[in-house]
Length: 356
Image (cartoon, rainbow, N blue to C red; front, side, top):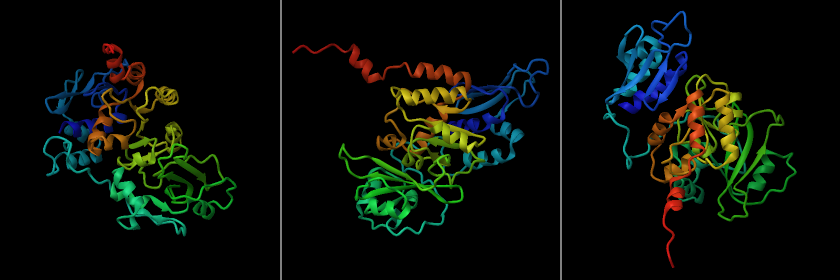
């Protein structure tokens, strides 16, 4: 159950003073049981560490050593109960689901639907509808189809939702991605093109709210800020993670500042050569946020591409939990990450040039 232990070590980390993740399975912090040292606030002698296929707690000051579960029980009863339910669930066999098993369904609570005339909820379309063919090809979870809409004529739909709009909109079918407030008020709509034509804008977004200061977050009406929140770039990517929101662009920091949840992790796209993303990651580290720094073996630039490459949602979640960093460790890891050349490019650099 190592991957479950790692998940709950990440969840309890914000509760531990001075907590630093030193490696994939090693956490260091001030011991919450003995307080570590009254004279020195910098001493951190509490550890969570890996032993075989589980994590354990040990303090080198008070010499207390125990399992992760008992450590959670002493700190947070609610978290401990959730840990017990997940770790000892009958369907768990001691390891995460292997490649090839069904992708677990992320359930979404039913919410009131907008009464739109020129768009239809995707879960109400006929099974053979081209829009559903598109969603199935992207492997979008069927449980999330009710959160997406289809507009046969996006121009007419924009006129219905944003009558004040004066910009030119093409009359074409698009997948509609709505942005709601926590009270389920429509703040914006984004139309995703089905066309593969290079000259077509993939996304055409319009604000419904006149307040430009409102930060748009796809999934804001569903997220529970009292639980760990994942913040990603793409709205479709967010559908593969529990309790996730999407910024719709690289401004994950804007979402994090507006959401202000106790535990948030920023998941930027895997694009180490994108200067905008790298700079945003550096800013996130300076401001103390937790963020994912992708391993060099990652296939795909975003979560949906990873799913299409054969990963499962639980497999991706394990990668996220194993590669979330904060503070000095994040700064060091990020500095190394952005300088690494992708393995394929290194191979090309050192491969002999064929002689014609």
